[in-house]
Every structure is written in C-alpha cells, then in structure tokens.
Image 1: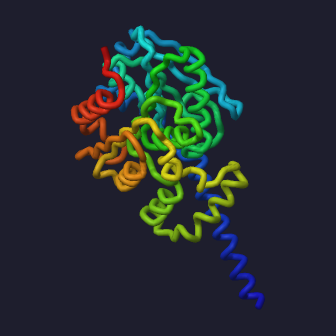
Image 2: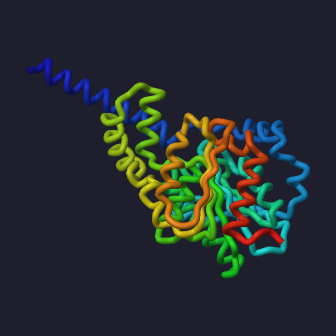
Length: 304
C-alpha cells in the first residue's frame, strides 16, 4: 500500500512540476533580443533607419487597463482619416511591424505600431497569447478614436499572436475596426498547444493541458479555453483578409482555413506559396501586396 501511495505521490509531483515548467514557458516565453530584431530587419532591407527618421511621428504612452504603460508610435505622413494598427507576434517588437506599416503608408494610411505587454518598451509581466493583449488593443483603439474623432477609417493588421489578439478583440461585442488582416493566426490556443506538445515534446496533451490550464488560472487568472479565435469568428461582421504560408509548420495553415470557412460575411483568403511561419510577406512580397490591394479595393475605399 505504501509503495502504491508513494508511486501515486511521485507521479502527481512529476505532473505538477511539468505543469509549472510548461506554464512558465507560456507566461515567460523567451523573447528575441531587441538588437537582433533591429539588425535582422535592417540587413533584410525591411527597415531603413534614415527613411524612418524622416517620417512624421510621435511616441505615445497609452495606459493598459491592467496598470502598465503600452508604448506606441503614431506615424502620420498623410492628411487622412485612414489609419492602420499593426500588432506584432510573440517574441517580436514593434520594429517587426515597420515592414507592414510601410506597406500601408504607401497606400495612403497613417499608422500605429506598438509593443505588446512584456515586449519591447511596454510594461506587463506575462504573455497571455491574446487574452490580456486584446484589452490592450482595445485601449489603443479607444485612444485613437478619441484622438481622431468619429470619421476615423480604421484597419488592424496582426501577425501570429497579434492576429489572434486582433480576432479576439473583434469578437468582444466590439467588432471595432472597419477591416482586419489576420496573418498566420492560431484558431484555438488549446489546439495549438496540443499540437506543439505532440510535435516538440512527444507528450500526451490530454494529461498535461488540464494541469497547465489549472495552473494558469491560479497563476495568471485566465484559462487556455478563453483564448480561442474560432469561438468568436462568426460574430465578426467586418471584412477579414486571412493570410498563411502553406509551409508553416509552427501554426498550421489548416487553422487559418478553419477560421476562413467559419467567418460569415465579407472575407478573403491568401495562402502564400513560400516561407514558413510569419514569412508570407518576407518570402512573397509582390503577391502579398497584390492581395492587400485586391482586398482594399474590394472592401475598403482605395487610396486617393
């Protein structure tokens, strides 16, 4: 009997330790070095510091509803009410958003790029893969609408976690932008984590996910089940352009296909032939811009 109880205790202790390790990996995911991101974008020709300096812009600090500052750049080269907000992916910073910002600046939009919580210059202690980030995005949108008035024409572009954040925001009784561009989002965090556990760690998700979910509820006050763009996609009325690389093996393109199929109303889908995760623009720039133009022409007034 003692041996059996001891085995059960050791098994529970091991599972709990694994759950703590796993939730640490989620909450405190290792971020890319900021200098590495800067150098990478410069060397690839996607960030030109001299050109960037010439843009009319100002730094903005927007308070998060959770008590920390959200650091953003408001870039306004145009006398226009057309604005785009760019939400970057996990482990990145707003420097990674500059390539998308430039794409929209060329099309007559002004822009906001910002750092998610616990990234770049923004505050916040944990990453929640869209749960708390969606409320920060709402704070940015509310700030911009208050600043620019009711005639604002607003789009949001999100990459990876930023795309999931954007869809979760749009699904909150809000649908608060005029159009959305979702580049390689996951459709459901539980499904994404299960896939990664099987692929990278060879673990059985049905055992670890419930433990991790319980620990996240205790440690970070949210549930994995709350982070599910697919559960809210059919409430989003405004147009969405879905983008994914066919060769993405981190977030599978089937997730975007599922989101696209379940979205009601105006929508478009572009599956990039080249590139892996979050590389659709980098590896297919001409096609990426062509699809953006088709989407804007079809669902948003074209640039004057």
